[in-house]
Amino acid sequence: MDSRLNAFLERAEAVLARLEPLLPTPRVMIDWERCLAARWHREGQGGYLQPLEVNLDLRLDDLLGIDRQRDQLARNTRQFVDGLPANHALLWGARGTGKSSLVRALLAEHAGAGLRLIEIERDHLADLPRVVEQLAKLPQRFVLFCDDLSFEAGEGDYRVLKSVLDGSLERAPDNVLLYATSNRRHLVPEKQTDNENWQMVDGELHPTEAVEDKIALSDRFGLWLSFYPFTQDHFLDVVRHWVGVMAETARLDWVWDEALEKEAIRWALGRGNRNGRCAYQFARFWVGRQLLGVQA
Image (cartoon, rainbow, N blue to C red; front, side):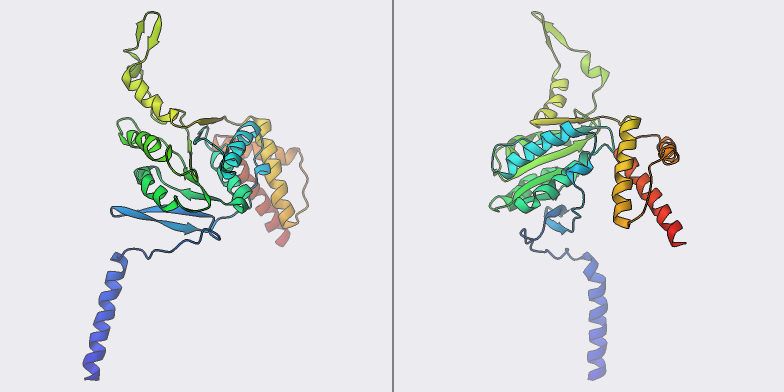
């Protein structure tokens, strides 16, 4: 009897081991008093919010050379956190220039006042009404963050986002706001053929419906912030800042000299760009190499 029971239990465990990967992910009830960020996961016809562990080391003062963009988005976010009217924001422009970092720095700035961040992928934007429904009656203020938002030619998903912005977020609870980043100002690529049928009526230029349809998506965002490629001086300022921050943390003595400056320039030339991400990566490389030499 014992041998048959043991055999049955072993087979049951084997079956469970094969079934467990197919079962839905266990849902975790989020304590928004402690949890500062979450990510929306789609599952079947629905989805759930997965809590995230976030690092709040990045501060607004770490973002150099984008003072105008920083101040405008910080003001908009402060209005939102204080329960005042605020706009959805589109941060567009060159890659690696601080768009996503600015949103993360604002979370660090206002987390103590109740600001929370929820990441949502572009392909899941149609789920926004479900997300909003879960947040509606909570006391915290939620920024829904979509990074690298854009749509390729021929995709119809951008119309879904237009209807979602007008139909759910514009009349959503006042504790929900959408921030998105993109390399494109108008989110959907415009073709030359879109402009062939512009008409002049009584001296007034009228775009085609196709152009209006594409531009209208960006119009749903009340705040547009543009980010531009770094000049060499801007790039070197950011390198010097991050090298200083990392060296101070590691208690490393260092000096900004011509050799270090030239090495940073060569690093940027080797990657074909000068931006904040490149500057941060060089700082990690250089400080790490110096610390390795000290240990050796």
